[in-house]
Length: 379
Ligand SMILES: [Zn+2]
Image (cartoon, rainbow, N blue to C red; front, side):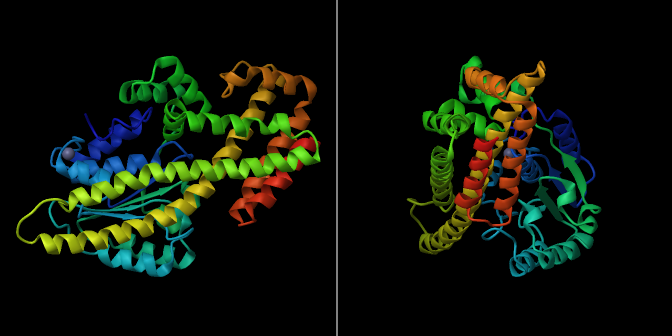
């Protein structure tokens, strides 16, 4: 077992990371890749490998602490709310200037580094320009262009690709015991997003929610149903986000309790319990801000799923021979392909992309989605 096992279809990146663990170190790394390619999974695996005395065995106490987010030499940062403020970043930079408590490295893992405000980016830049000798920065962003050039140019960039459906399916088969056909179908439907594929294959609710999203093109045929479809889409995304965060929250709380030795007795136990209360409070704050992001990301994911549906329609209209993401919906795809033109399908895809853009500008989700479903229905 290795901490890199979870990285489906990223052999090149994994080879580079492995050689960095044993060889010369770069102090700033940038992990990029489209949503679901596993950039934060890769960064976390790398952090575990750097901190593990055995190069990332995946089983020792150090590896387990990294997984639980409780390792003393791993500073795990996520945006408070929707972006990193300057104060949060400055605090972090101060902590990152210290020395590791145990091992060779102090690792700072900065998820969604593209969500830095401009001032926060300046604080970050200073830290990366003059890194503390034992500190390693791991930044994650969708693409290198999402960061200012000055930061980007100081990082070694690891670009993850969308893993092929087969590679994702293989992980589901080996690690989750899903049977091959089901794993492959889930991997195709999730378009290489491993966490999503796992949920589709193992959680019947997730599969039902996907079905609801893909019903939108069938339902949105006139104004009334289009508005109803919009409301259903927003609600589905919210339900899904809640289910995702609930599944993550509980094991994290358990891991903190375990790390502080809850239930044990002996000297210093009262002090440890106070430390635990503080850690649990920190965790709760992080979980809340994650819930906000997950809600937003989940709706975006649903929109991408919808876009993939119309892309399948377009492929059919052009007679292209490709693996359809929604092969399980072939009937709907065929009907839509036959009853519309490629130009209409393209306009529909554009309407979805416009909706995604408006959501990043903080337009009320229901409003943006209604506008989109109306455009889908007009064609
Ligand atoms: Zn280990």
